Length: 452
Image (cartoon, rainbow, N blue to C red):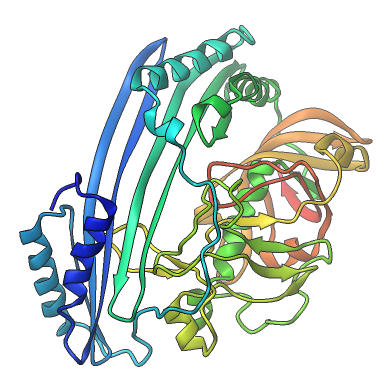
């Protein structure tokens, strides 16, 4: 089997594996193949370039509530037979799990979306490099105080095939791209950093000038930054920071975290857990989302799920396994990193429903506060089990409704539970980001800032 096979031939190959299922077995075949490009430039020259094609297969076998899994990074027919044999052998090493089982068709149809761009697929490599070089040039030409650390072009695309002995037989295909630039500006006591990016269904949709301007502004506005006074104050989150916080919250709403007793909201279904201004949805069917999809990792139709509705916890996201264990229906939220792993439960494309007002308008209503431009230590400083939140930050002071001096090397601290209830304004300046969550400006009251 090779990457030159048609999609239908891949399906038939998966069918042949599934057809070997014994009466007491369930078999799942997941095949993926794709291409990706990574370009990094510096000083007008290519510093790093990778253009890669990959293909692989993962097979799960479930027998008497024990699961065996194996995979290979090739679609060669002999390798596929070996993977199946190994998965069957691995069943013996699995622990019995009363909830073990594959997804089954649930009658939900996929939603037609524009997830594949022929223009991106045909886009010449030389022009990908040229875009990264042009982004660097535009950035350097905006402000003489700024240096470019690196400018990047990244794309990826492919298809996934899921066939199971329980009746699932589906194919998904998508591609995406973005450019980014990171900036440096020397200060008297160190270097200030910034970033900018642009996304699109294809490179023709990139706004390079906006990406360059944002990267320069983020670095230069921090020149002369000092530590702020420690106090409790109001925090305005930049859209990228909001997206990072949403991603953490999304993890606490995973059915897998709930059934394993590792969610702070596991026993609060139906309760108010956030400000009434907060409505959080997972909607991979919105093609504007960078991670939009028509299928989840188990081959079920992706769908729009309301997680928090006007502050009330409405539901968790479930894979077939976590749903079975929780005694509910799957929400089409099986997630997998590729053919080398089994699916878990997680959000596919988080969206906070926007409110009204741009960032400047939100700041105008704040007498004392901080604008958080970037955060650090999110993975180590946030405990998704207890909700404790303590991260490093940089940004701008807010005074009498206006941006004041730049601030750095301070910590913002609260808990996820309190931050959700302390949201006082949700902005309308929605941004679609190269990640699994959108972002917009967000105003959170009574956050502890620890600085000088």
